[in-house]
Amino acid sequence: MDTLDEHGTACTHVLRGELRAGAGDLDGGLADVRRSLSVFERLGDPRWTGKAWLSLGNLLHVAGDMDGAVAAWRQAQTILVELNAVEAVHARRLLHVASHPVDLPRPS
Picture 1 (cartoon, one colour):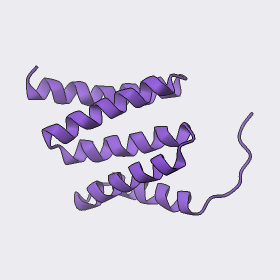
Picture 2 (picture 1 turned 30 degrees about the horizontal axis):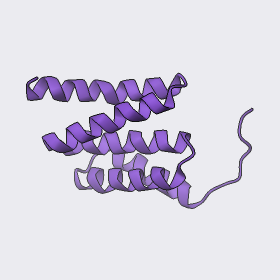
Picture 3 (picture 1 turned 90 degrees about the vertical axis):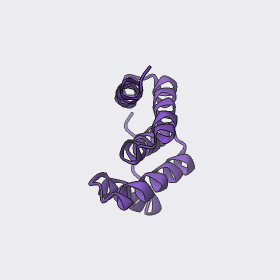
């Protein structure tokens, strides 16, 4: 597979991972995002690496792994701030909310 095909497939897997998690296959979604993250890091694409870290944090949060989510959001923020990417604002807000938890009832 050439680099563009590999990159495109990894982009698709990030989106597919989010969709799988939303459809109830959280483990499959996490696996897709983690697989994509390793591709982006190997290919040296900081923008998609940051986006994948952001997605990974979101899915870890849904899985109840708040420590893992915060670590992933921090990675995302570090990368995305350096790139001056708009997603950095989202990562910053997620980290702020995570550090100021509000005890809201979970939907039943």
